[in-house]
Length: 217
Image (cartoon, rainbow, N blue to C red; front, side):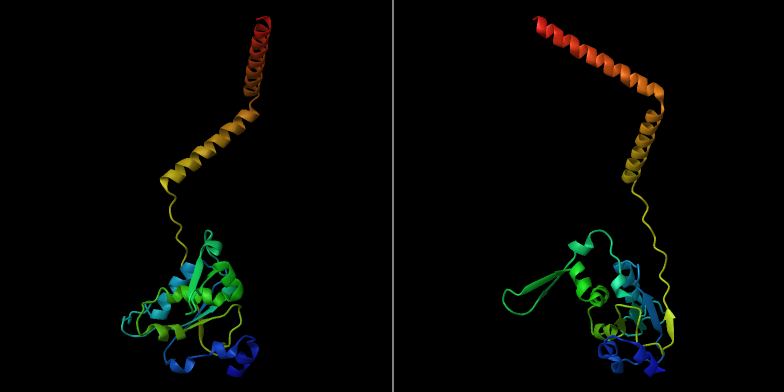
């Protein structure tokens, strides 16, 4: 069964199974996260919760009781706002003046798995358990993975809680809606059109009268 799952996987097998020997897999659950259409930060927060074991009643901050996390479809992750162009990753090569940077859009083209990995690792506490928890995170750009022989459990993301609209924004939307309705009513009412035509005629007559007075002077 393991050989069949490995043969169906077309990615980098060495990278996919690296470090599994260092993990005690007895009693661990295999959670599968589908990143397609998910917001990056919200998905990373749920992964960090599972990978630390905070969803278990036996959680302790000094023990590594987290479960294995398999993330699929990393290339279809979503971000809000203008983070694709505004979010920039910085790193230094160690040489003088070699400060490198790369936008989130370029990183998604180069390696989308690193985007999720960085987001999850930066949510974990920086202690001795961080490397062990990092080994339990397996991210794949597509829907294929070599762990088909494991007892996989799909993880159901909690419903997104949309923040209530701020009062100032709500009032602005109500005013804009009332203004649009009033303009539509004025366009449909023939009386409004007649009044507008009479006003234009009066204004044009006054302008012509003033022109004649200036000509006489």
